[in-house]
Length: 139
Image 1 (cartoon, helix red, strand yellow):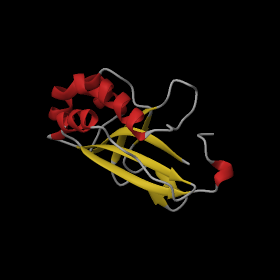
Image 2 (image 1 turned 90 degrees about the vertical axis):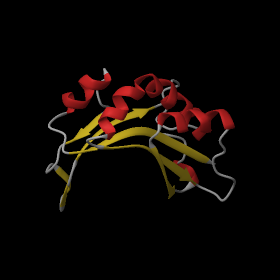
Image 3 (image 1 turned 30 degrees about the vertical axis):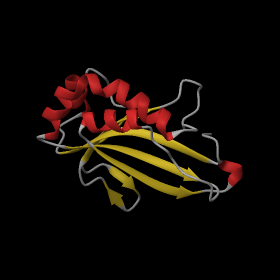
């Protein structure tokens, strides 16, 4: 079974979380400032403003990447003008995690979703991670 995470990320020389949040009218679900500790031996090289889209069922992961991306598009497509302005100063992209516990088929996208993603005009990154079956499920 595969599960998925979906978020919009804005990366660059961001002075603070409010700099992006005020332009988009929403607070980040996570924000990391350039120079902050990323791990005991690493720091963030650039600031990262991120807004995660999560299912309404209390889970943190989607059972369908199409559903997660559709929710992201519904949230951010009305903000396309502001996103295009931000793209002039920052790196803006959709970041998805695919968590696999087997070799069955991955994500499928409808033509409608592909049109909406194209209309948003941001890069889509999908990273795949392997995990044991017992830890799958968004907990």
